[in-house]
Length: 91
Image (cartoon, rainbow, N blue to C red; front, side):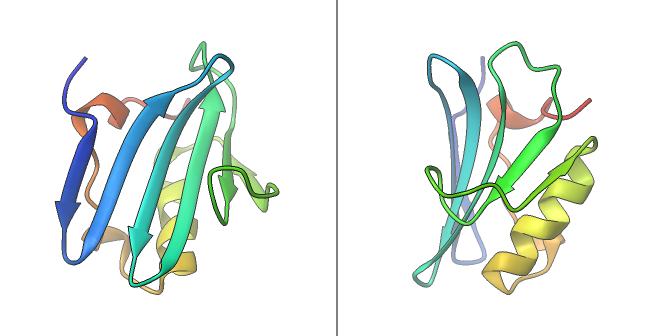
């Protein structure tokens, strides 16, 4: 499945699967963001302020979800490390 954790630019990204979701979380300087998708991997991506936070927005594309997650962290989307296991998220 590939690596489930990646770090770069002071940001740590973790990928995990729950019973219902694929979840990519980011942590940086006390800030957090999360991108969730259903476990089957075909639904829209949900951006949240944390893994268990309320949904802020939904996106079809991984790039747009990453843009929003980066905004929540106050960083550039290009600074976000993506674990291999999460690289196929999005529609």
